[in-house]
Length: 366
Image (cartoon, rainbow, N blue to C red):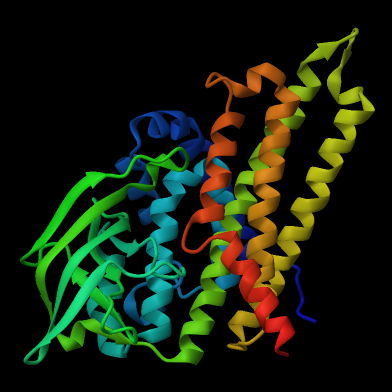
C-alpha cells in the first residue's frame, strides 16, 4: 500500500498552486467563462511559476515532478477555474504523451521549448478516447500526409499539437501550427470549461516527417491512459472542492425560519456527503498515481479514480446548486458554472461510460 501522505515539498507546491488559484484564477473565472477564452496574462504567470511544465525532466528545463505533484497542483488550479486550468492541463497531457512515447530527440525538440518560452501544446480532444479519428493518413515517399479535421484543446494557442489518424493507428502525429496546410478555424462553443479554447483545426495535405511521429506500443499506451486518467480526475476533484466550499459558505449566510440553512439536518447531510466523496476521490487518485508511477498496467485503479471523481464532481456541483436554491441557477453565483464545468469532464478525452466499460472488461477477464 503506497504512503498517501504528502511530503513537505509536495505541500509547498500545493500551497503555491492554491494561492495562485485563489488570487489569480478565481477572480477571472467568470470573465473567461463569458469570453470563452483563457486569460493569457494569467497563463504566462502560471508558466513563470513553473506550474505549466511540471512533468518535463530537469535536463530539458522542467521541474521533473512526479504525477502525484502534477495532480496536487491540478486540483488546486481547477478549484480556482477549471476552464483556465484546461490550457495547463492540456499542456501536461501533451507532456505525458511525449514522455511515454517519445525519444530523447522528441523531448529535446518539443518539450524543451515549452520550458524556455511561454508557449503551449495542443491535444486532439479524442486522442485518448474511443472516438474514431477524422483525419486520413497517406504515406507519400518517406513522409506522412494528413487530411481531415480535429477539435484541438489549446488549438488557438498551441505551438504544436497531437493528433491521431486513420490508416496509421499505431502512430500519434506531432503537427506544427505553422505547417503548410494547417488551418486554425473557429472556436468550439461548449457549455462548460469554456476557457479551454477548443478549436476546429483543418489539415489539408499536411506533410509530417517520420521523425515527428510517435510509435505506439500497447504497454506504453495503457500507461499513458492511466496517467492521463489521474490528471483528469484531479481536475474533477478541484471542481468538487470548489462547489463544496461555495455551498458551505452560502449555507452559513442564507437563513430560513430564523436560522442559517447549514443548521438544517438535510443540508448538513448533503455537505457531509460532499466531504466524504471528496476525501475518497483524493485517496483514489493518489493510489492510482502511485501505481501508474511504478509503471504497472492492467489494473483498474486509474479508471476507477477517474470515473469516481467525474461522477462525484457532477453530483456535488448539482447538490451545490440545490443548496443555493433558485439563486444557484443564476449566473450571479458561481455554482452554475461549476455544474457546467463538471459535466465537461464526463465527456472529455473519453467519457465516463468508456471508463466503466474498460473497468468491467478488465475485471471480467482477470
